[in-house]
Image (cartoon, rainbow, N blue to C red; front, side, top):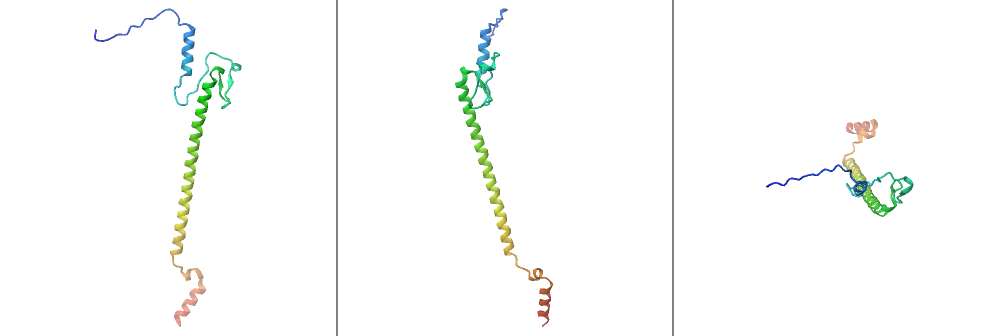
Length: 137
């Protein structure tokens, strides 16, 4: 035989309830993704659960409170770090925009200072009359 075949033996007996409960409990405690939450299975009453002191929206079994606190604190620290990074990026963008506006204002001021003043356009008609009289003399 070059290939190995798997042979599955099916039983007509039902799977014991303890095994199913252990499988569900193990699956609930495994971390699937970074932002996974642990659910409570088995129809436990809310009065048998306790609130997480770090996040009041979390209800936890007393037996798994220590593990939950570690996960909850870790996720809070990650959230705070992400918020700090976003705030820093916003602060840098505002400073950059402020510097760009100041630079534009300085350039505009320099252009105004470099342009020669045209006295006839600013002084009005009286200056033009004086200039014409001076040329006629």
